[in-house]
Image (cartoon, rainbow, N blue to C red; front, side, top):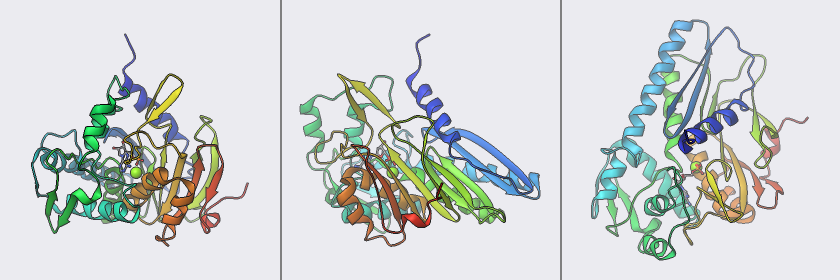
Length: 331
Ligand code: AMP
Ligand code: MG
């Protein structure tokens, strides 16, 4: 039987994901994972009563599933699918409006490097399908006409599209938002120590009495190797990398983070990790900085005092923002 590409991706993500946990449970610990939002989502919660933890974790997964139904371009009835199919936009739910507002803000501040209008470009590359391919240049050029942050606007719950063929894609931010909401649900259930990881978009809740959470950041070129270890609590840690979803053709790696100027994969970075207070913001910033590259990326981060970043440039050189060192665990 030929290998199924999405399945391979899922298994790889699972392997990578496992390197992210460094836990010493206090009391009871519950650890569950599910396939959702195109990746493996893993939730770990710690506390004294295992039954309550189970209910909380189920609630967190249910919330993420609910959000996927609103935010995914693969769900027939999602806000995103409705917007993409409409000629000029339409009304969206509060959650979708929140994601769009944050995404449009990062889009604007990053000079369009972060772009929520790349749905058609993404579909042409087919990186979430069995047979990804370099698109026909004519089709790519046509897909880029009339899109970009200025072509999408939000007024309350009303979204307006300037170009009818514009397709919305929240793939660079929706997972992060869903992790934030999962953490909110865990907190509502009284959980004070937990970690949620959606394929590299994570939040670490609570200072653990003996030790904060320790996270090994994946080396972008050496599988199973930790690039750096950071120690955090009550923080989002989000990584975007060119090793997450890609195919090789004629010796060139084509991956899933696109430069909106060309419609081709961005070429300046191997990976970007952002530590900040919300996963949605970290998700959008990791993607934006990845596209901008080390110099402009670090410049963008100066506009977000709550965010720190570690950037591995395409030549393997690491750059970090001024206060990154406060999270770094010295070996
Ligand atoms: P991430 O793994 O968070 O960097 O997100 C990658 C996903 O974001 C891709 O699979 C696309 O759905 C979407 N995406 C790709 N390029 C961009 C971009 N320049 N701006 C915003 N979203 C993007
Ligand atoms: Mg992202």
